[in-house]
Image (cartoon, rainbow, N blue to C red; front, side, top):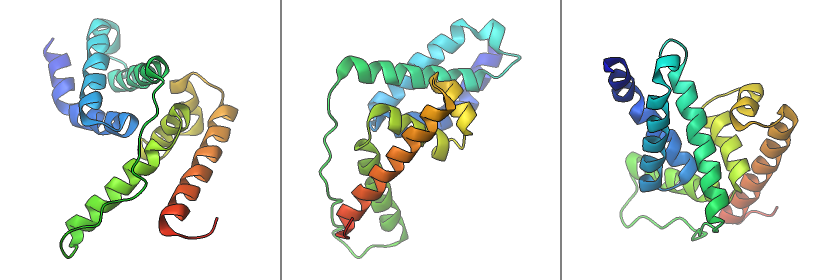
Length: 163
């Protein structure tokens, strides 16, 4: 099991980053990665010579979608990014941008959010995204289009620009 331990050490940070984008919550992201790694461990003998990271990510996306379906709760967004209390420096501006991104992603329905994370943060192709989510390429295209339109609208509203 040294191979599995090496895999976990090498890829956990990247998996948690992706899970955080999907879940929008650090604790939920850590739980999501842990659950996905448990399932990866169970299948390790058949995965270790193929692509265990792809398998882990696919499990993670499916677990998150299942969680969304079970909870059916609306995410609450404040609608505004808090104003910095000091003169913003490069790190402060980066943090504000991250908060704005998180708030914008939180406005998306689960499938649209998953498509945006896979396509633009994980840099997967439409076909690969469709495979991970178990949907058609046409669904990926339509969900991407709807998600980007909603993100543009949210961004325009926050900036006070007309739609």
